[in-house]
Amino acid sequence: MRIAFAGVALPKRGAVAVGVMEGRKLSPSAAQLDKRTGGAISRALAASRFSGKADQALTILAPARTQLSRLLLVGTGKADEVSADGAARRGGTIVGHLLASGESDVTVMVDPIKGAKQDDNLRAAHAGYGAKLRSYRFDKYRTKMKADDKPSLKRVTIACSNPAAAKKSFLSLDAVADAVFMTRDLVSEPGNIIYPKSLAEACKPLAELGVKVEILGVAQMKKLGMGALLGVGQGSANESQLVVMQWNGAPDAADQAPVAFIGKGVTFDTGGISIKPAGGMEDMKWDMGGAGAVIGLMRALAGRKARVNAVGIAGLVENMPSGTAQRPGDIVTSMSGQTIEVINTDAEGRLVLADAMWYCQDRFKPRFMIDLATLTGAIIISLGHEHAGLFSNNDELCQRLTDAGKAVGEPLWRMPLGDAYDRAIDSDAADMKNVGDRVGGSITAAQFIQRFVNKVPWAHLDIAGMAWSRKDTPLVPKGATAFGVRLLDRLVAEHYEEKA
Ligand code: BES
Ligand code: MN
Ligand code: ZN
Image 1 (tube, rainbow, N blue to C red):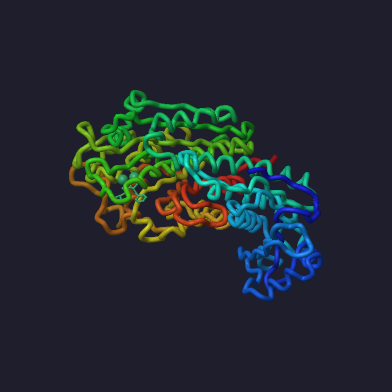
Image 2: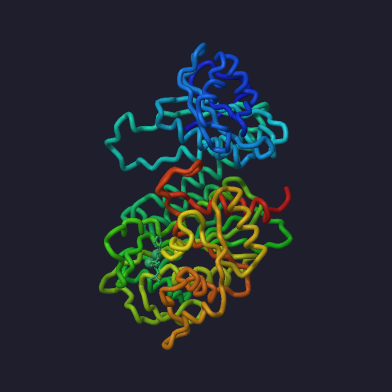
């Protein structure tokens, strides 16, 4: 879909979207259209319950006295709450309404609003960003789609007072959107297409953006002593991989230490010998959502030339049952030297992270470390699909993450850590076991990971409930969400970039 910017002028044809503020207060463009249509908007408002609350929408088809195909009224909330992040959501809502409506063109009027948090041009850029984010589709395997089901919307034109300024702001947002699309593609692909080697291969093009990409195979990981990660992959015909990505966008920074992101990349999780039930197992193709987000994040940072040094590490394995698979009760030695009794081969993500995180600290001495993982079903029991679980040893990092998540619509909820939980993974046979009892399953998983954190600020995001969505939201069509990419990009932009 094409996103374009233009000056303030109501279009003659096609669809037009205008804002209405809370209390049915018309934006300047809405008021102008109301006049042109002999009061069609006022009458529609009077006839409906649309009040202008944020994210409400109301369609008027073929308004009289015009050649327009439709008017879309979009609620913006109160004037002083009109923001760039809100504009992104509205851009997405508009595309959600029009994508397969038969319309091919829409003009979105972004007016100057007195008291708004950001000016109309920055809001326009974000409206374009939201429109693009919502336009994502993964249709490549649907060869027999009916014409009526295909997207019709081809172009979104955002009208604002300074289109050149809006377009300039849009460039870096567009880079982030491209990165989100990359993650969504990777997460949507099935396990026969995306396996450790093909996923590692998919990282290579990041080199064109200036990211240094290294890929470690089984032999190298053996040398490094990554017994925990390798144990998970040993039952699969697909060789495990570790991808190390570096973006050095702040070569002159006083503190050269990078920020680091580590992703769980289980390209398919059958559970291994502790095999999962058949029902719903196909969902486990997206058990690489954490790694997918880390890859997308690196693409976003490089794509918008973020002034930060960042490392992204993806631990890639396939968890399969077979004659060579790891057994329950096996004891493995991790790169840290700590031994692990593998009670349940389905608690594999933490084993992958243990070695990927140790490697990260050992080699890069990062400023902080954030891991993302579709780690536990239990986090879905706790938080549903509304928040990802946040576990951390650092209050400041937690606060920054929580704020960034709220701003971009990828919310986090902090969960506890503590010694009493940690006791649950003590083992009689080894330094620890990979599962506790059933209770507090997300917390004991986080405690396990924390045993591989070495006095560095660290946060763990359990995104099991957030990596895939069964419903559309303003910026995210149902399917792979790329949860974490926009959140962590915002975190970096707000707190960890060098000044220009
Ligand atoms: N990948 C799963 C977690 C998961 C479950 C993600 C549902 C998304 C949706 C993880 O590897 C797993 O199997 N966890 C087990 C842990 C248990 C064996 C302690 C779980 O949550 O049941
Ligand atoms: Mn599992
Ligand atoms: Zn898993």
